[in-house]
Image 1 (cartoon, rainbow, N blue to C red):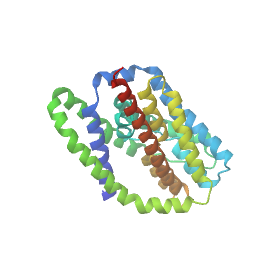
Image 2: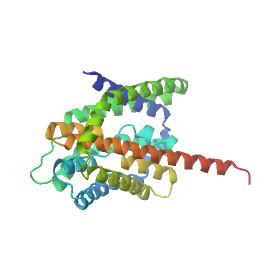
Image 3: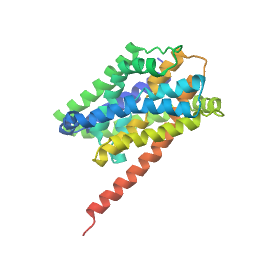
Image 4: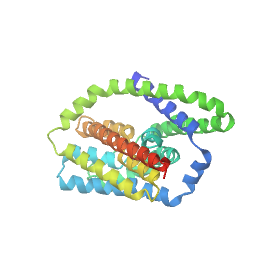
Length: 288
């Protein structure tokens, strides 16, 4: 296992374990029982965003593997770091973010081949590595999440002591992974630059944020979480598919460029949500 894979595993495990330590079990169960919210989240991510991607690709007349890369990201929702990106620091719900962080990648194993067959050109075939994705979901996401929940329930003091070192471990893993991927990201943007692909990515990410906001329902924390969750597509799954199915084409650079664009846009969205949530809390505490 190379440095990149080890770093990714450390990132995933520390992230999901920390989320389990912080999640309120009663709130998590309440989210899971909110069938309307979960249904809207799945509709937004598995149906609306892929449809929007097809429309954007046609509107900007994307061709070839740039279009394939865009569509591939559109049909693969869910990233594990939703528990950080779309939770309380963004004025969102940690329990909702943790639910989506596991539920959407798990469902993607079934939906990606089906959706690809509907929206990809007839001569394009995308291979999904089921076993690899399943092992990642169960071993590196579900198990740490459940372990964190068990520790938080049985030993709250230990859970509190573990949170700080886990956050530090996560941040170190992020820095190392960014350093490893930086040259590849720069090359990818250079390869895609000059096509309409970058504009298509910007438009689709912004439309995804708006879709999540509209489908989030009346509670502001769910809107914040779903806005970010809908904008962030699963770079891990898409990169594996792009490399295995479309090696040597612009599909992989497009996927990596999309990842960079969605990251930058969602950082700005999260900062806005954090600021608005902080102002809202301040107004609630202000004397009348």
